[in-house]
Image 1 (cartoon, rainbow, N blue to C red):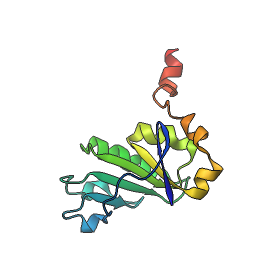
Image 2 (cartoon, one colour):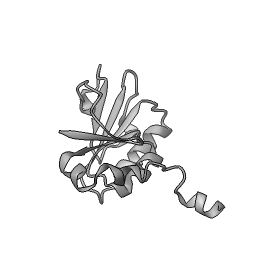
Image 3 (cartoon, rainbow, N blue to C red):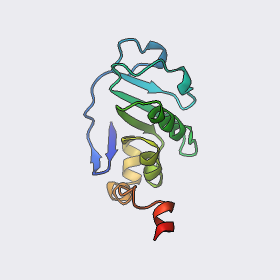
Image 4 (cartoon, one colour):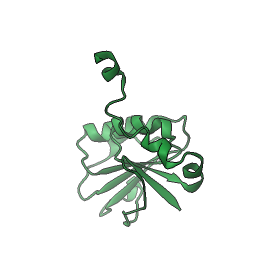
Length: 133
């Protein structure tokens, strides 16, 4: 079972289409991208409602770069980080373009909802706002 983290807190899964690998994307509504995916090889976003980017380790930040590249390329659908993303990384995930994070039950138990919600005001707590104040 997985937990979806959004700015409002923990949520249940509400997306039920199957995820396809990039090489099987013809007609797919959702894609699963590995952390080493080259975004330049993605042909287009027609019909893609959600892209899920894998985070194999909390120390692997390539997913943040993938999210940024997808948003810059014009992807406007749902973008989800999946795997080993920590509550401390939630603000960075949102700033890089992710809409939500998917974590497993064990991580949700170790880092409960209040820790994620504490970082949900990701627009206010960045270095730019501290410098301006």
